[in-house]
Structure formats: C-alpha cells, structure tokens
Image 1 (tube, rainbow, N blue to C red):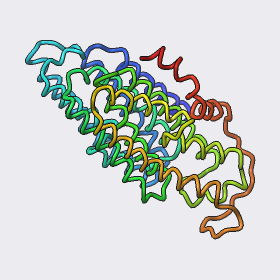
Image 2: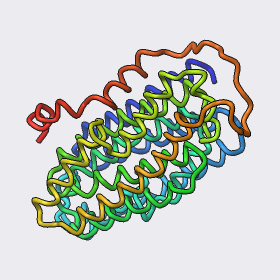
Image 3: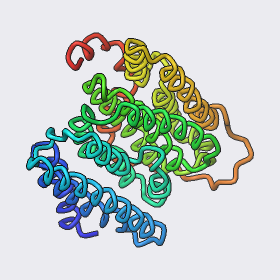
Image 4: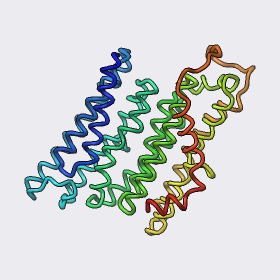
Length: 348
C-alpha cells in the first residue's frame, strides 16, 4: 500500500475515534464510528488475500448493522424527547437497543460470532488495531449509555462473554482466534461493572490494551501465528519468549502480574454490590482463560528442541522492528500491580 494512503487511513482512524470521544451529540458520535469503520476496512484488505477480503467484508456488514441499530434507537429517542444529547436517553428500551448495538460493535457475547473469524483473516498489525484502538470509540459511548441501561442486560452480556471467551479458546490452535476469545472474555469483565463503577471499566480497558498490545507485538517479532510454531521460538529468542509467556499469564489474571489488577478490583466491587453468584461465575470463567494461556506457555517454554515439530525451522535473522514500543508494553503488562493503590486513588 502507498505510504501516503496508509498514513491517511491511520489519520482517519484517529479522527473517527476523536470525534466520538469528544462529541455530546449522537449524530457526530455516529459519524465518528462510521469514519472509524471505513478507515480500517482498506487496512484489512490491503494484502489482497481471500481470507483478508472475507474478513473485511464480514467486518463491514457487522459494523453497518450495529451502526444502523444505533441510529435507529437515537432517532426514535430524538422523536420522543426532542434531544440529541448522548446522556439524554430516558427511555430504557432505547438505552438497551443502543447497548446491544455497541455490544455487537465490540464483539460481546452472544453477538460475538463475527469477531474470531475476522481477526483470524488479518495480519498481526491490523489485528492489533482491531483489538485495541477500535474498542475506544464504542466504549466511550458504553460509558455514557450504561447508567440508563438495564442491569440485567449488562450482567447477562458480561457473564455470557466471560464464559464464551473461556470455553471458545480451549480448543484453538490459531493464536489470533485464541486472542479473539481472550478479548471477548476481557470485554465481559469490563461490561459487568460499568453500571456500578464506570471508572473501573476504563481502568480495565487500559490494562487490557497494554497487555494485548504487548502480546501482538511479541508475536509479530517472533513471526508466530500458530501455537505449534511457538515450539521452536525458545532457541531463537529465549528472553522474548519468556516475557511473552508472562504476558499471556498476565492476560489470564495470574498474580502478581498486571492482569490481576482489574479482575481483583472488579470482583471486590461485585462483592460490595451483593452479587456473589455473578462474582463466582466470573472467577470460574477466568480459570478457563488461564488454562489455555497455560497451554500456550507450556508449548513456548517447556517444549525444547530436539522435539517433534510440524513446522519449518526459521533462520536466525536479526529483527528490524522497533523494540521500544514492545519494551514499554511488556513493562506495563507485567509490573503494574505494585502501584495498585496509586492507580485506584487516581481513577476510582
């Protein structure tokens, strides 16, 4: 792709997200979501591979459906109330329809079916953008719409996403699909608490973005898209593979790594809200995620050469990729737990 076109699309992604984040008018926020969607589709299909074109098509149809639902709900709300302000959704039905549409946009279960297939058809760089940057604009709207939405709907979305994200990742051999189900599970943890402490959802989203960015950049550095490929990476880059293993365990929420921070605070808040059953279901679902992360960690660090492998060994070329973003993301993904009191004081 022409670098000027690529830069223009990246700027358009930033423009769309900024419009949605800064707007208080539903039409402007909707325009930001649409600019975001239209900017990432050429990035998805730039390889020209049939899987990439298929992924871009599925993504476009899904996002168009979600955008139609959002506009349908806010037009009805404007017809009833005469208001286009984002925080003016007095009708619970309108708030619930908007919440379902935004759940479709970010890939929450049970409207998650498009997300693993789309992520599997993308390269790791575009998959990183889809898994991190594309969550910001919808979650900005979820943050504002959640106070008027039904708590039963939010609880169902959260628990269902955590369970589906855990069960769906158990039998995966493709790392991109595994990370897609991991994203679905993390989205469930964020949505379950947005009704009670919205700032805790923002904290969870920030920690998730740091951990997922570190994972995608590490996998791109070692050129791995399948679990079987990771078996030969220890001999090539033992230090990076070890840090990648710890990052995956952090995604699973294992203390004393950073991923334990939001889950700990969310479970504490659910207990304070007298929701022990939901807290127990979320904790049990987290164990499912931790299991398939442990499986990947075993393949990476405990499967040593010589061993039976179905993949071709790669030559030891030096990587020309930037190391600073990966280093910063790894530090954030592994070492945020000791500063929990400071983070809690600043955000909650």
